[in-house]
Length: 158
Image 1 (cartoon, rainbow, N blue to C red):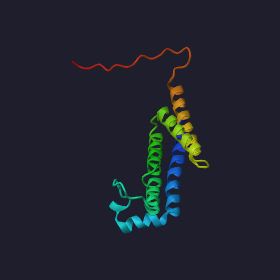
Image 2: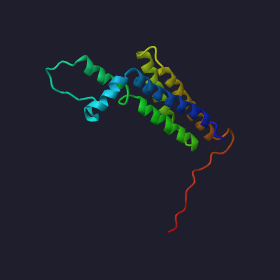
Image 3: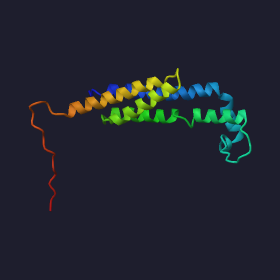
Image 4: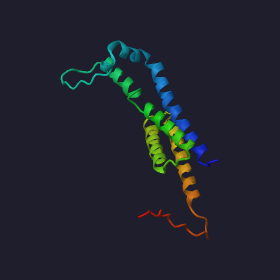
């Protein structure tokens, strides 16, 4: 069995749970705003008003916060990234370490800015991706004393 697969599966599971939990929590907390989007029509759910002179109301600001905290936020992309990594792990495709470093840095910054928050669980997911990438790199290195294989060139018929 692929030694990096469990690491990537745990990382993807953490990401899916974080993203889905964020969306579920938002739906529970701001259910009135979410259902109001359907009554106003989806195109008018979060209007983009560029006109100056009109002060934003508390209701319009709450509507924008609900949007950017929900479907416009990080929950959906985090679920998609988690599903992608789950899929790649199942196919034994290596996930690059930069993806883990980026996820870990983003979640660490988010955790510092928004304390207390479950952002720090994303740092764990990033570290698991980095560990899996290092296992992959270590497995592809030749052992000491073994000759390094030359790259294979396919001969083309003329």
